[in-house]
Length: 78
Image (cartoon, rainbow, N blue to C red; front, side, top):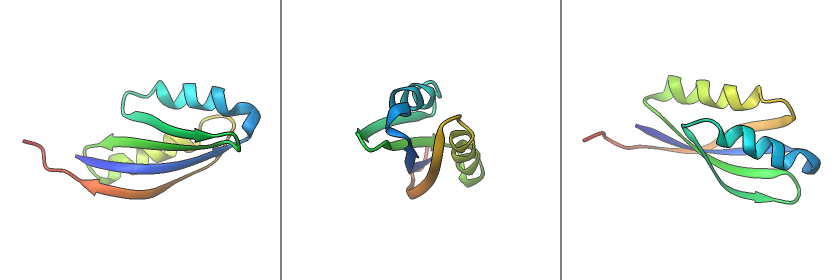
């Protein structure tokens, strides 16, 4: 399993809407947000290709200005 940290930017006025849309994905968790419209999100995916697809899905959310992978960690499944 690949766990990735994502930084997401949106306008401050759209923060609540974007947070709700990201939280609707089963593979995403919003851990932090600030009033300037930034969110820290983790995603869980089976491999790198799936992780990249998850980032693309977040990037396609209306009102998301930027979403980029900041870090990742590979965990072995038991």
